[in-house]
Length: 61
Length: 240
Image 1 (spheres, rainbow over the protein chains, first blue to last red):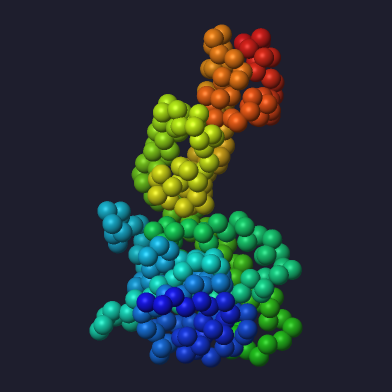
Image 2 (image 1 turned 90 degrees about the horizontal axis):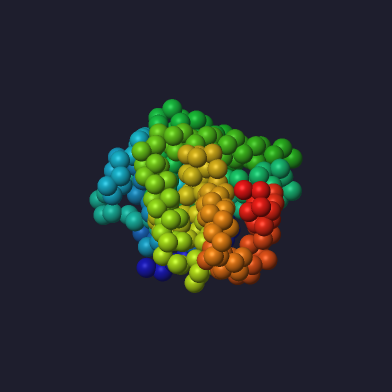
C-alpha cells in the first residue's frame, strides 16, 4: 500500500472527494465521503479525529 | 471496550490527535460498517500569531500513541461534537475578517475540553496508572542497581516511557497527574536521594559518586547537587 503525503487541506479533501471550503482548515465526515479506500497518509497538518465506531489506526503499522 | 487486555472506561467516542509528520491508516473492511468519524484538519499556519499558537505545546496529547487515545462518555462526546459542528458551520459561512478568529477560538475550546477529559481519564484509570507508577519506580531502581548509569549516563523520561511502552508525553502527563510531580522531577529526586547516601560514605570520592550516578563530569554533579539541595556536597556532609 502506497503512503500518500498530504500537506495541504486541498490534498486531503481531494483524496476524500470533499469540497475545500477554506485553505487552512477542513472537516471530513468519514461516513459521508464517497472516496474512502484503504490507505495510509503522512499528514503534515494538525488532525483531530472524533470517532464513534473507530476503524482507524495510526502510529506504527 | 477492550484494547488488548486493557478495559477501557468509556466507549461512546474516541478522540485521536495527530501532529504533523504522523501517519494515519484507514482500513476499509469489505462489507464492513462505515466508520462514523469526523476529522478536523488544520494547517499550523492557521494559528500563526495567535495566542493559541503559543499554547499548543501544552496540548501534549498531539504526540500520544493510538493506544493512549481519549475515550469519551456520551456527554463528553456531545460537547466535542458541538464544537466540531460550530467549526463546520463556520466553514459553510463565506470567509470574512472574523472567520480565522472564530475557527481558532473554537479549536482552542475544543482542545481545552480534551485536556479536561484526559485529566478525567487519568483519574478514572487509577489502578492502571498506579501500575505504571510502580513499574517506573522499579525501573528507576534497576537503572542504577544494574550499573547502566555508569555506562549510558543519566536516564531520560523517554528511556522510561519506552520501557513502559508509552509515549514520553503521555507517560509524563500520567506521572504528573498521579504524583503531582513531573517524571523529570522524580528522576532528579531519585538522583538526589542516592547522592545524599553516597556523600556520607567516607570511601567514595566526588568523582566516584558522579561516575556511579551517571554524570559525565564531577562538575556537572556538583552543579546539579547545589541547584537541587541548596548547598555543595561538602557542606551537606559537614552539616549532616
